[in-house]
Image 1 (cartoon, helix red, strand yellow):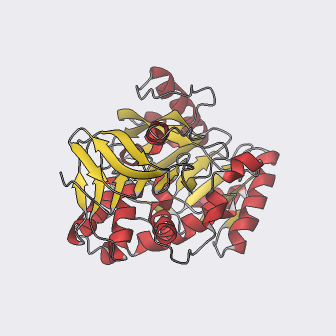
Image 2 (tube, one colour):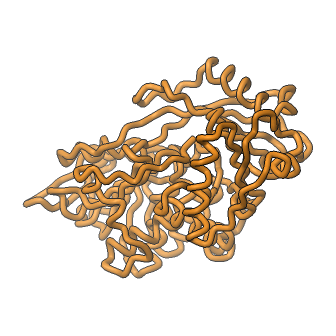
Image 3 (cartoon, rainbow, N blue to C red):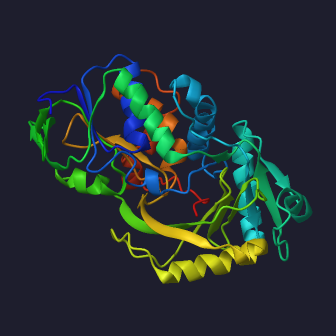
Length: 382
């Protein structure tokens, strides 16, 4: 392991690998990415792979909108030798209650103000898009054709290979054990493979971001929350878009290979680091899925798994320099949507850290919002 670096990035998921590429692209040399396991082994590799722009806050919608544009051209931009498998089958977000429908109207107003082409549609129009959708009690739905999904492992691999060509060094199976400071500035990162002297540390390790911040005596306002998912056997294509029902806490999509990926949120999930799978989840997701999409009732489950959301108090990410640890930045708190906004998150952070003009006000994602009580509450998290 090298002894010095200009930038050390902790976390080898979408945020860390994309950020390494964006900084190297802007001329930064001697960048090291540290990952305790293999790349994309954390939340990125355990996510549902969805990419949507249908958010209720302007901040999330802008990051998602601009990230979609990057996903669309990523194979070419990163000169990837494979395929990130970005398919824009759309997102169908269904509302089964009047209160949900009223919130969707507000969400779509935000999206339209940003040029996102979401449509508000009737239950019958929703069923035309997904014929096996249960429209009993359905109030309405929103649909955005340019939403879709991508392969998280291939996306990270594309950034990794592009970063390597630009000189980024990746240290996998390496654990950070401490952060050194002198006079309020970070000076080094201690790891199981040795120490790296550096003046810039970027904490991009998702649910573990709080643990890293504690190494400099700072309590980051986020908590881990388990979310489980499953994948079924592959069948003939029958569902183009991702279907989301916030009322049923459900998301469900069919991959290009024919398998269905689905999950449900559990409002009673404890705030801890548990990533064990449970039979209760399997029963819950099956009940919700066949209620919304009855055709899926005979599908066989291949496997299930768990991952951790890094939840912030308002379900919006935190991009900020840590107080009393100058040079240490955090990019966390994505609350389950870090993958889909990863490309533009990396651009925004690279611009800020390097003193360049930011494409949107990064201050909105700062830590001060919690102290001031000015939260950016996101209403569209499943």
